[in-house]
Image (cartoon, rainbow over all chains, first blue to last red):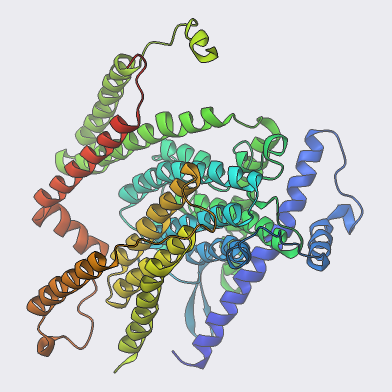
Length: 380
Length: 167
């Protein structure tokens, strides 16, 4: 590593950091505008043209507000929690390739901070560390609503993490790589979203639950829990939680784009000096599209009830994720062993057969619904 | 000493201090947080040895899942979660057990890797492909045995936790 390499590395780090911050500012504005459109309001209009600077103004205000900490709080942990909320959110983004490699000063520079051999694992590790922010914030506030919110959302995040990992395992098996750049390279003909569509759906749902966004935002169900785990936070610490949540959403969308939607791949007519711009634009466009879907979901669906959320995670998403991992195994192995066409037919046949058998077994395993008379038992 | 060894010394020191803090902490949640530091230090040690996959799996499973479940259990059961002091009075037994375990593990390690033959540089990095084929070809039987034990533990937990109506 010579001086120029270091300059390029630090430059990329700063670029990603600033780009994430700006994307969060724009994303919150976009979310508020789209939701306002849903509800036939205008949304924020005052700061900047069409209110585009509203998040900046909010952040500035929060920055100068007093940070109050409750008397009962466990101070070191209370101060640590917002930091843990933000840092893994940024770190998780570091393995995502946001453009094709470019040539600067005669060196090929990948538009990615670190191309780890185990990129997907890194993402999972970072999201699981992010759970600490919720647990610690809820516990250290020394107050009941945050504690309840933290218990709820920890259970939710841990449960949906399992299903999310299963979806990612299927993609890893299909593409045969753990490295993000290799997964993007492998999607040069067909994006993974087509052969791995079930995994894509499971991933999108789990990602929503993982970042505590509506309709899975039970951690901060205002009507029940005030604001959930960050009730007692104010000022810049609250802003850090907010920032962490939105950076996480951007990261999760970027992962969906990288693993399923072909990453930065896309059609671009220009070669030469402007060739690097196309992949970056495509990446931004795809991430925006995924985020837009998330905003539409938020605007459409009501918040889920807590027991239904857990049922959905454990009884539907996780079994389906396991099934899809097995099915992917059949899809990957059989065509290699029995020739391309025959193996593919066999894989589809096995998947359908397993699906039928499982749907039969499920009927047998399900206990009959409790009779309405059992309500009396609860009352006594 | 090269850079690897300096890094190992730093990581090992932090991990050991945190390990002592786990047992001396008076607050369960603080103890769990020190445990996080210790486990992360173990993960870092794997990374320093070039075992990238094992290192991150260590962090993902132990830091990301197991300690989270500890904390979750503490919150859910309202176990001594506040500033209740945590102190187990039976120190003599604890000291004996600790010394025996330390001697046992130490002699085992010294037998397996005598001090003189310690390789200076980390051996060839164990990628996920090497690890996977070793796990599912050479060691498939122990692997299946372990997963069977885990399955039994899982079913046992469900049986214990479940309250059937009418019993």
